[in-house]
Every structure is written in C-alpha cells, then in structure tokens.
Length: 191
Length: 193
Image (tube, rainbow over all chains, first blue to last red; front, side, top):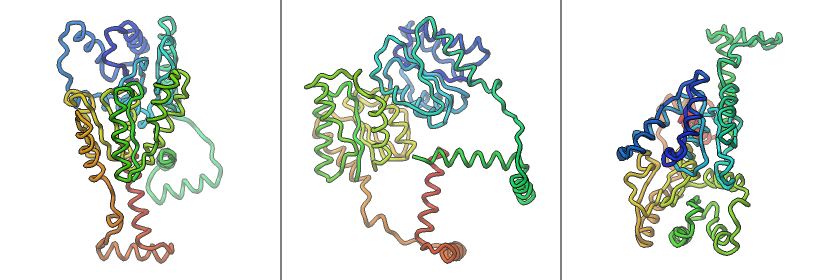
C-alpha cells in the first residue's frame, strides 16, 4: 500500500525518533511512503541548509501524494496549518485516516473535531506507537480485504441485471459497480 | 449576504482589535455574520479565563463547518494560523466559495501563498484603514445583486424543443428545469473536485 504521512514540518527535528518509528512501522509492514520527505527535511533542518519553501510545489506534491495513497497517517500533536489543510483534503477524498496524537499533549485541539467513518483518532506514547500504526495498516491493507466476492441474488434482481446488461452491452458486474458508485456519490452529496 | 468570519482563538488577544474592525465593517455593509464567536471567545479568555481544555472542541468544530457551508463568503484572519484554519481553507475551496485571507505578516513565503484558486484572495494589511479598504472591496466584488439573480437565456432550437417536452411531461417551468440541471452540474463539480 502507499501511505502518505503528514506531520508538522517545524517540529520534525524535535520529534524525529517518533516520526522514524512510524516510518519504520510502515516500511517493515511492506508498505511504502507516497513521498519520503521527512528525512530530507530533517537533514536540511539540522544542517541549516533548508531552502526557502516553494509552497506552490509543496502544496501540489502533497495533494498528489494524498490522491495516490491508499491510507493517510497524520501526527497531529502540534497545531499546524498545513496539517489541517491536508487532513481536510484526505477527508474529502474519503481515505482511511489515522490521526495520531501524543498522550502528553492537551485535548483542546480542533483536530478532535474531525470525524468520519474512515477516520480514527489514536493517542500514543513511545511504547505503543508502533503497534498502533501496525494495527491501522493491517486493518486497512487492501490485500487483506476481500476485493472479490460471490453474492446471491433473487430472480427479480437477476432479471433486471440481465435486461440491463443486454440493453447497455455492459457486464452485470459493471452495472453493479456503477450502482454502488452512484450510491457513494449520492451519500457524499448529503450535507 | 452571509459571511463566515474566522481566525485563531490562540492569538485572539493580538487579533481582537482587527477582528472587531472586520465585524464592524461587515455590519456597516449590512452583511450578516454566520457565527458570531469573537466576543464570546474573548470573554472566555480575558474575563472568565476558562481553559480551552474544558471546551467541547468537537461541537465548536462542527458549528464552524456548518457556518462555512451556509455562508456566501468566508473571511479568515491568518496572521497566526493553525490547524483549523488550514482545514477550513480546504473546505472552503471544496465548496467553491470566495475566501479572503488576511495577514499582518508578509504573505509571501507563507503556506497559503502557494495555493492558487480563483476563489481565493490573499491580502496583507498593516492598519485598520487597510482592513477597511480590503474588506469593503472583497464584499463588493462578491455581493450578488438581486438583479443579477435573474437573466435571459437564449437557447438553440434543439435545446428549446427538449426543455419544452420535459416541461410538458413534468409540469415544471423551463426555468425550473434549467435551474435543476445547473444545480446538478454544480454538485457534480464539487464531487469531482
């Protein structure tokens, strides 16, 4: 799976060990980062060679990374504009999201208001961080989920699908996929 | 016109005078504010000194998002910006609503400087007078006049025939049919964005 990992750029240097633990958990589970930006940013911060940020490029790169990712992980212990922007974008894209927050930080954060069927909030410490990330990745690993299944239909549905298939030249599976897609879109329209 | 005015509660002390000025300008222009939170937040911080940990952040979050959705335009004070402002910016752009971002710090080199959208206006200000000019210009540019809500449409013969047929079948007027089509197209654009 492709995983996009969001964190606050200004706090990378201070929390690099925790961020590395998350990255290791992702890579050890056989997944890859959509963009491997954290080590690069850390090196530049510690060497004092960080160039002036090109926000147009960073903005585009991150949104592309979210779009191509299967899941999104975000470290949200520190209030950050860019993190908020990216999480909103990931929520709009209906990506499974894990919002990590260190158990030592206060609860008075707007990130706690982000809700949705695909979003989980997790508090962590250095002992349980890896296991929480692993659990999230396992739960959302597309390989471990059924992408193909058999299902039983009654005569009425069978007749409808056969008729629709003959009329449109599409397979029954294509018609069903379109119906589900339509249902997803209808649900997205609800305020 | 309804405007959602938002900013950072963390830096309300420093922003208060400017937030009040924006509210004052909006009231002068006859614009309503979707969620009037500034004086409440200031009272909480400055007078009762209730710590933010005691707040129901989830309901505040939801109230803001609801205000954003029902507003015609959004004004965001972003001299000090944080998580929720980033979140609201992404939501505003998704709903294709005009947004004015204001900052007393130079905007060049700040993250929202990189976001290009026809719905987004980013302005730097130093004084209350600057604010007055910027906010009035933004509201004037995005106020939809009643006469603009009604206009004539010339349709081709084919489209006329189609709309007339649907109109006879459904009992709806051609204008209702075209409005429904435009709404459908708008929703689809939001979904695909």
